[in-house]
Image (cartoon, rainbow, N blue to C red):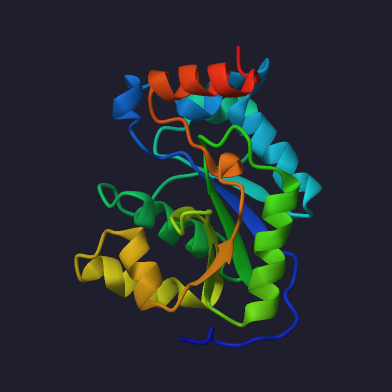
Length: 207
């Protein structure tokens, strides 16, 4: 397993919500602004991150307009057309001089809570790995639900320079450690209107 560059006691991690996708499967709608139970997904994410002790939270989006009402700094990708790995690069670059680690979450998670977030951050602090990533009961990696050491910024930049785009593959290459969760529900993400409808029907939370 690759070790992270150093392992001092972790300073309070910062947070970044990945909202740079085009949401093509949802008709271009900014998914973070969808409402679940009368609360926008992104507002709920911010509240749960704050409850878990995340000291600062930014939104990574190339189009800032939809998210201006969130009251958070909006950071664009450093280079466009890269996909989520480009957003992770931007988040690490933004925080590199100020913290040891960044918690990343996608903007379309209506059910993750401070409990899962805290478990991920605690695992990062305990494992000594450069990256931890959420894994559900069927051993499926949720590669964008992750805590990443800021010391990996240069390696991620080089991976992008070398044409790598898959977050999952880069995390494997860099020695990520999975944090296993028996319940996959907190990591349900809304990609399509059918996903939202299914969430409404199965959980009675969204309306």
